[in-house]
Length: 271
Image 1 (cartoon, rainbow, N blue to C red):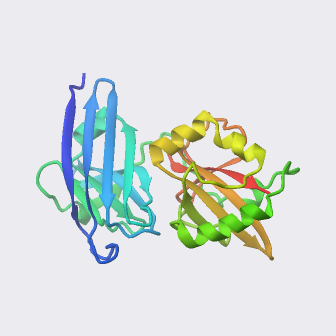
Image 2: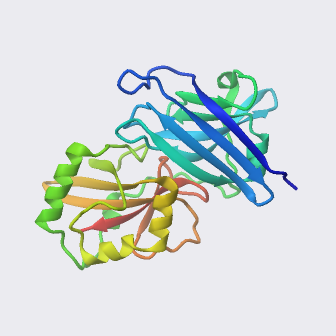
């Protein structure tokens, strides 16, 4: 059985070029494990926004190193992010470092349990899924459009979104955009003129739990031949057994069909 372990690890800069407003990224992480499970807490500041980052546990593996993706990181407009992730206690005990990586595998930040090691030189990703991964085209956003939308968005909502585009943090939640969709990071407590059915969805315990864990939702605006479409996304780890009422599609942050444990977003179309 796992005994209680708590390790505080400061982040150090690995790759330059991800500073925010001239300040280099910094922060710390806390690893906690016990018989009841494990928890990883990340605090990050001065990390360049509008870039897709992913936190990895780094392990020694044979003569090289391997990384296990555990969550996406979306810094706010001030370059700050905080994440609490529940993980397997054994993984937290065995890992030697926690790295924040870009899609190019650059590491703006890395925190080490003990001495710093050159893990970048021989590095591979771990896939803990047992299911076979099949290649498929990303699902187009048109598949999210309900056949008979019950409500139309008000002009007030559309004006509010245009205002938010100027003030809220823009982000790229998906490696490959399926359309010309502009995504922004939003709070669950935004003062928006939403249709009643969307308000009901956002009051679901699943949505509140996701917001408390990942500290954001996403709002997307797509322009298709002059017509504007809007989406709300709820961050989550994919489970094919989940049946989230009102959310028609789970879209993985990576450019592939979702598999168990993938990070991404449950999306709902708003007419």
